Length: 400
Image (cartoon, rainbow, N blue to C red; front, side):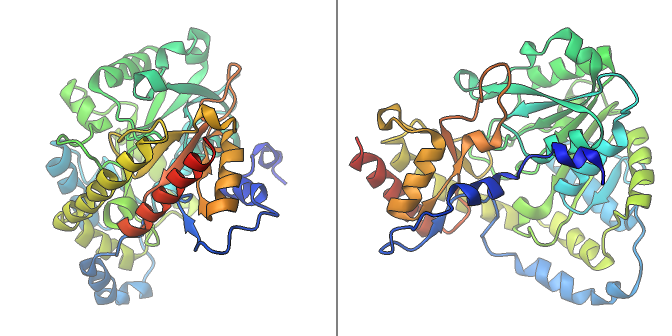
């Protein structure tokens, strides 16, 4: 067996299952889960119709590069959304969701023969970053998000000797779980560091279309374009339809950026078996070319967060994020509980599931930046999320 597999830690939801073993939730309450970030809003009918209209695609093998019509649809969306011009022929590649693409990209980029090969990751983080780094033969280096700076990642804290070993850096903006969006000044900082040390930037932007400000979140390619880096050197962005269009089961997204990286990634994926079903490709074209369902979906989230955030802020340190569908709430110190104890007691007393923040981070430089926080995924209908929030308020008030 591959010995690197032994380095992988249990996934957060496996840890949550173990944490809740032996707990019997209060039977008078129906179960409500805010734990898993799986979109629950209805899938748009136009995507369902596109799927059923192209079932004949099941009869043919797909090309790894994808249909040019899909790549053109992705390029069109990039230009409409970000004002970014990317070549459908050389700078865009369809992928089966951002999760598999993020993992596979690390396997493409990392040269494990280089001493001390390092992958830099925000902390807390999407767990695929760590697994991708470890199985590529690299060592992850975790950089904390700072609550006092709207959960901005403290890139300045990374020592020069770490940057010298770094081959890949994962950026998540809007962030999971914090919802923080990285500003242009931070992008410039990373681009300058990439120029100096030669590492590749993987920009995970799968939450980009769920936002609460008037201005849409800045993307990596957009930042590069604004700074005159139109060749997107050493930069790759990752996006998907799962959150944007409520199709997590479709497994469809794309990557865009540096043409040389695309060429290498295409080669890897040809052998890896990363081609997208023709049927899914046709449905994806319909989704990327239609924006009204995205606007309506975003309005639902805005309404939901406008109702739920003030409720919870009465009893917890929590605020409306820049974007994403998570609340990143601090466990009240007055409870005298850790984040894991809070999750256990809340489930037992009120049958509401939240994810302990410490499960989404790693201890680095002496502390775990996810500790004493919980992630709440507001993905269900508003009424269910409101009921969960009301129970959380009752739970905290009953103990303070």
